[in-house]
Image (tube, one colour):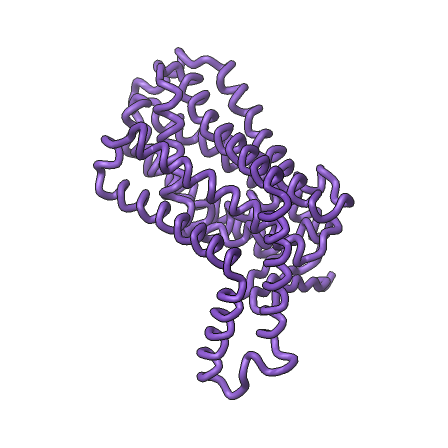
Length: 358
């Protein structure tokens, strides 16, 4: 498997993202548009909407802070603004690639461009993902303990929720297992390469083969992760706290939009629904969960937002939390890449760059 991006593929992904978004919003429009919409907008409170727009900065700068804190355990050369650029690139590429597959490679690429070696960039990115997993698992527990039973009674919603939660739990448990048992990880990889080599003429683990490079790189990443777990618990805890602040700021944006539309709602009620939406759509195989995010939000927020304002809410919510990141991220990525083509190859864990023809 290879993740490849250049100016052409990035712009193509942007077009697909916005195309699917427009189609999804059109569906919401068909089912929710009412004559009362314009009159209902007269009760809007712009102050809340302005605050929601400003709060999206906390996502980019908070995610950059998390990268900066973790990278400081490896090197002091990486700047904070370089980490912010990497975070913006991550959010951007996650939004325009299926199942967010481009987010990690884009972040690694920008960290690499900012001066952090590839293996170290991979390790830092993995640690940020683990912080995200840990926070969302805690969020799952909060939903189980404090509410949303009525929302989860919907079969489709429950299936999506269980799907997201299960994937996060499996990933978290596997990482913990392999960190605690490094020999098991190496043995698992060796058995895997032995198995798939049966279908090829040449063995993957032959001297000089790519598989040996994979094992060596994974060992290096593992040593860095061990360093975090053994000697940087404070940094890890801080990274989880920053992750929580970043996600909560995005959840509060939804609450501010609701209040900005003049609708009374409880903060926890809105935030808990946003947690559910995040868990249910995180691995949806469309760019940025487009389609599922708009339609899912319309369905789940229908109990809070009046039907005549539902379309307006969905548009504002996606515009602030997603469309703004895609717009700014496009500029960041195109400027960072120039005319290069970037290929991130999991089979040999390297970043290849080549100049495209002028």
